[in-house]
Image 1 (spheres, rainbow, N blue to C red):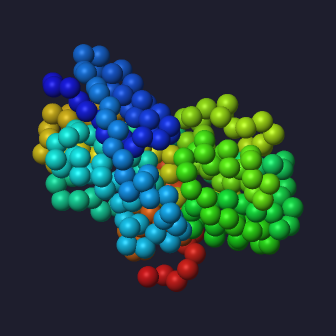
Image 2 (spheres, rainbow, N blue to C red):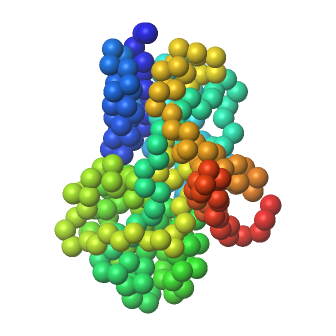
Length: 271
């Protein structure tokens, strides 16, 4: 096969995720040559956009330029955080593989011990997610929410340096992939079991061109069907609710005796 070109965003987390995919591919295809190409997305360049209310720019905010690169044959596979990928893919593109999911949980990174329960009344929690904002207000009424943008290391630095911030919420998978050593000294990391995740959180989606049978055969080796069944159920619910990546919908599916069991919570009017 020719060299397989992976497309990814340029953040530290996106590059770590592309490396995971690279290593999985090489482990299953030792003779395969895999290159990585960085593609800037609107979400990377427009830090002024409020992710809790992105308006018309919300759909594909972190994916459209990667998909354009696929369609123009600049890359062969786009590596996405699945929770950022719209449920309906553009004509000509398909989901080539979904590797095994990492930890789906949310964590609170805080200047106080004890997670959400340990925060004092009136404490300020930073998040760019409408889902997380709604869950925090539901689980701990009386806390303040502050918007925050930037990659994971940037958000951690902002928390550490800004005296007005008490905590922020991150996906545990992202922190695990980057390494917990990036958490500044004096901050505490607590898994929040009450924070039901976004659909697809912790999973990667590998998008490719429809009909590219050679690439599809290569990706098949790293596809994890149990993960795919679960995240596809979560994304099907998101589609049925008419929501996008910024929707205040939380969902998590598991396999119990080979049946998909889905838990979810939605904040707002049913569409």
